[in-house]
Length: 209
Image 1 (tube, rainbow, N blue to C red):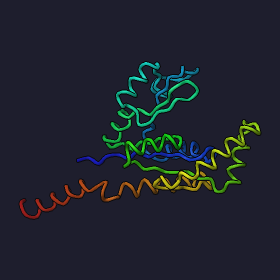
Image 2 (cartoon, rainbow, N blue to C red; image 1 turned 90 degrees about the horizontal axis):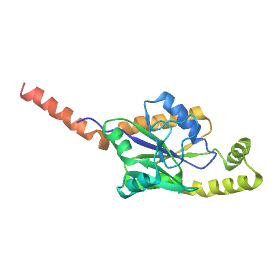
Image 3 (tube, rainbow, N blue to C red; image 1 turned 180 degrees about the vertical axis):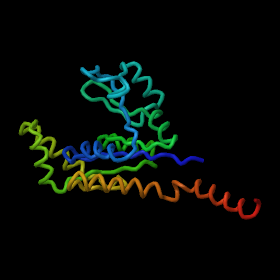
Image 4 (cartoon, rainbow, N blue to C red; image 1 turned 135 degrees about the horizontal axis):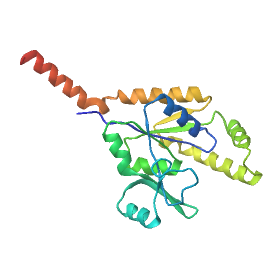
C-alpha cells in the first residue's frame, strides 16, 4: 500500500514571518499548496481555483452543512474556509500538503485531522517581533498596539503544536521545517504498512521462491 502524504500546517503570530517561510519552503520541497474557499468577490487578476475557490454564500453554507471544510471563519461579512475533500484527497494520494493558516484555524484543523504536522513559527524575541511589525510601515499606532498585543497572546498557543521553530533567519527556519518533514516521513507509525509489506516479501523470497 502506498504511503499517505503529510498535511503540514504552519501558523504563528502576526509578524513571525510564516508567509515568507512558506514561500521559500515551497521552492525547496515538493508540496501541494492548499487553496482556500471564499465568498468574497475575485480581485483583479485572481483566478478561481488558483488564488481561491470563489463561492456564493449559499454554496458555502451548504458545504458547511456537508462538513466539507477542515476549518472556516467569517471575516468582515465574508466566509473563508479550507476544503476538506481536496486536501485529504491529495494526502491520501501520497502528496505532502502545506497549509498556512491562522492559529484558531489550525486548532480546528487539528480537531478534524490530528495526524497532521502542526508547526508554530516564533519570532526570536518580542522586541524583534515589534520591529518586524513596525517595519511593515502599514500600521497606525493604535493598530500596531492591537496587533502586538494579539501576537503576545497568540504565543501562548505554542504548547498545542507538535513543533516550534524560531525564525531567526528564513534560511535556518526553512531548514528546520525540512528536517521535520524528513523525520516525519521516517516515523514507524507512518510507514509500518510498508515495513510489513517488505517483511512479507523477504519471507516469501527466502522460503517460497
